[in-house]
Amino acid sequence: MSAPSNLPVWQALQAHYAEVAPLHLRELFAADPDRFARFSRRFGDLLVDFSKHRITDETLRLLIELARQAQLPEWIERAFNGEMINHTEQRSVLHVALRNRSNRPIQVKGREVMPEVNAVLEHMRKFADQIRRGKWRGHTGKRIRDVVNIGIGGSDLGPKMVCQALEPFGDPTLRMHFVSNVDGAHISHVLAECDPESTLFIVASKTFTTQETMTNAHTARAWLIKELGDEAAVARHFVAVSTNAAGVSAFGIDTANMFEFWDWVGGRYSLWSAIGLPIVVYLGIDHFLELLDGAHAMDEHFRTAPLEENLPAILGLLGVWYIDFFGAASQVTLVYDDYLRSLPDYLQQLDMESNGKSIDRDGQAVKVNTGPILWGGLGNNGQHAFYQLLHQGTHLVPSDFLAPAHSPNPIGDHHAILLANALAQAEALMVGKTEAQARAELEKQGLSGDALEKLLPYKVFPGNRPSTSLFYRRLTPQVLGALLALYEHKVFVQGVIWNINSFDQWGVELGKQLANAILPELKGERPASGHDASTLGLIAFCQAPD
Image 1 (cartoon, rainbow, N blue to C red):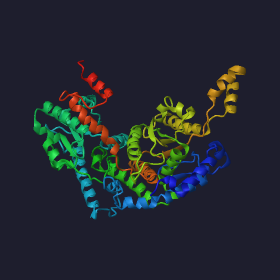
Image 2: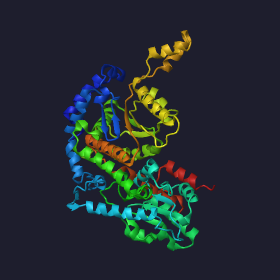
Image 3: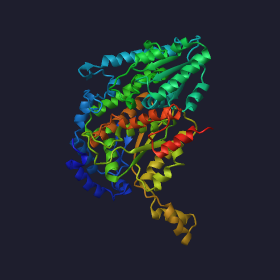
Image 4: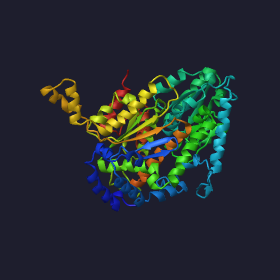
């Protein structure tokens, strides 16, 4: 495919943008009482409302045509059929196989992968069952009470987010910890909370060489041996998610307790694989399967639904609409659900590592804007922090609002207040406050004359700020699975439109390479040289005596 800007529909969208840009959402809603019904979709217990977007029926028609001209349906089929769409690494992209609950045959290089997927899932089930039933004991015979996952990137963000999100479904006798930061403070704080006799470590590294992960793993290993006084204890307190059997064995882990995954599973798409072992341990296999069920249902929707009804396609296209036509550089995730507090961090990696690209699939510089800067946090807290920018700043920032209709912890008016704020903020971003409305409010407060006129500009809200509301009845494993798969496929849709590879991440390599060169210099093993003056000056500062 050529650059998207060369597609005939792109020019039509540019012309259409000039027509739509002056329109205000207030007027669009006032003129169309059926707008919500036309621009919202239900998926099980998930409601996706995109009516507060700066679109018309014609906008959606043109965006759907953009998807067709970019051959999105063909790309979806190629992905699900196991073709090597990750062309720079010559890999298939088959995280959908990990949650293929229909067991539909899926092949990679002529080899059926579902038997292997099911075998690893069964291995995870058996191990987790041993932990949860107290049959797996530590070196001194104590039951496991603390589980520490040591990983980074996709080996940390996904499992951590899911365990937090589904805490009401978790085993209350287990405490879950996630160590990712190579800063010694992180592992130190976690170890201080753990009893070595009842702690299990899950070391997640495909190669078993990841610098940050293995540094933390060796620190945990040394701590365990020191506390228990026996190197043999490692085999009862450590398991691995890896493909490096030799490295795992050398560490002291029995390879029978090594859980494998495959090169067609990208790190940021891996929570559905053996990387999800801490999820299975904490939630149990039944709830993990429900998580997979929800994701699979969204996969099938994405694979089979017409583009006009296809939720990942619609949300992905809306993102392109703002990024490439309105010039929106960022998007914010506003979570009105404390259990989803880590979702923005998870989505940051998913989106920015996938679509933060400037070279297209043909090896050429992209001619359009690609992935947005993704940020966000807990919505209620954000109202007292960054919402000022959303309402009255100079940047257009499309927003995603996420909230449950019902809380698992009904306490007084807490949930009603939470929902009222979520609904109000989405409405406020859309309608704003006109000068006439602001003037009337100030007059009611008793202001007049110069005092009123001076304050008036500060009280006006432009509105017309777009948002998507993703509301769900309750945050169940099925709903979470569907929601995460929705975002995964949204990212894929945008990558197809922009003609970029969403499944490699070469941009993370350079910093790692330079760090490997700087480390021996910092440690004084060789003189610092070959760097710019700034880096040399900073190295010298760090080496100076305390």
